[in-house]
Image 1 (cartoon, rainbow, N blue to C red):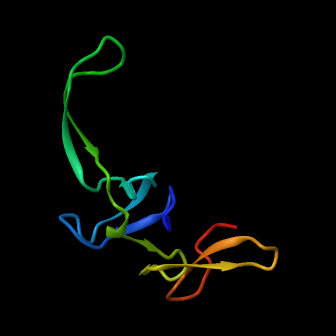
Image 2 (image 1 turned 45 degrees about the vertical axis):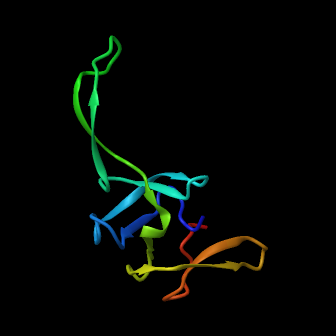
Length: 105
């Protein structure tokens, strides 16, 4: 997948179009991601003896990875992700708009 946990992304389609958030979890088998404060659903939680209170909880649910674009840390624009090999042989992700490295080396 071209997105990783911790990336800042912008939603490009759906009910949350235009919103930005950080990726909390990546689910590669389903090609989905969970982004903070995006695609919130209400869950009815039953109280338990440990820690949990009862009530209605809002939590983010997964959205398809094709609906998000990575925001480049250097140019600040949503961009497609490319790959490049460094001299030492390490594969890194690059911004297709400004050709800067997205990964923190």
